[in-house]
Image 1 (cartoon, rainbow, N blue to C red):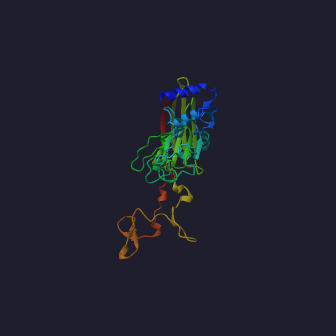
Image 2 (cartoon, rainbow, N blue to C red):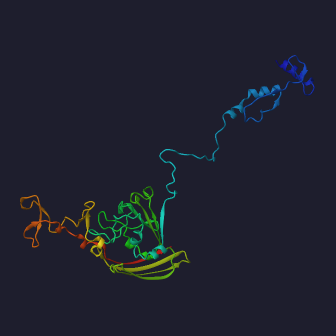
Length: 350
């Protein structure tokens, strides 16, 4: 075996450069071969090699295996992962929403003296809140309501934050607008669409955001007075506000105070509200006036019959009940109740 190797080496040394021995021992020019490889093996793609090199490449297919099965990413590389399911991407916090803005100039031109008066000029404000016209249960507070969904479904914010509520008992807890001085208000934003997904269940009807003056400097005093066309409901008010910057303009101190006295207007003071119309009897028929619930009471079965009766003036006996006994509660009801309001406010911003 060693002899054969030596002979082959000797014959190989005798061949000129560029030729090899064939199987018969003759010196010949080697045949050219083209070896195909998988993409990514740059050493073999399009290369021309001899038979010995081709045999070696075929016997060592490591580059082809690496090309077919690339290695995983190195550490430090980042990939975007999109998670679908219960946490789907949404734009509730960035979507546009209809917002009405009442500026300080509009408040001044309206000649209103309370936040309640300026907000009730909007069509979206309902009638189920506690207002100056509320009778039989009013507690002096001013609780706004949007869309008649209730005062507990309208969220009131001050400078984008929840404002403290005034507790007047079950069902009456709300933000009393009378506790916010009108002189300190810069503008009012009203979100008329429901915002329960952002703020919670108390924002189903909408959100009212009262924005106060942030960097007010100087002193301002206002004195006003109003009266109705009929000469009643007289109103007088005085308010003042002063402010100055601190810490080289980075902070501000604000002080304000106001006093308001407004007279009452009874329902009997207006012909269109007196007497009270409680029912419609149809075309051509007189409407039903006043209330059948009367102070002296109404009793069924007078004289063992089926008629109604009521007590006499002395309250000692019963007499037949007639339509003239119906109760006109408009004599005691207010279209606008009396309001006396005084407040003092101070604010500091750093």
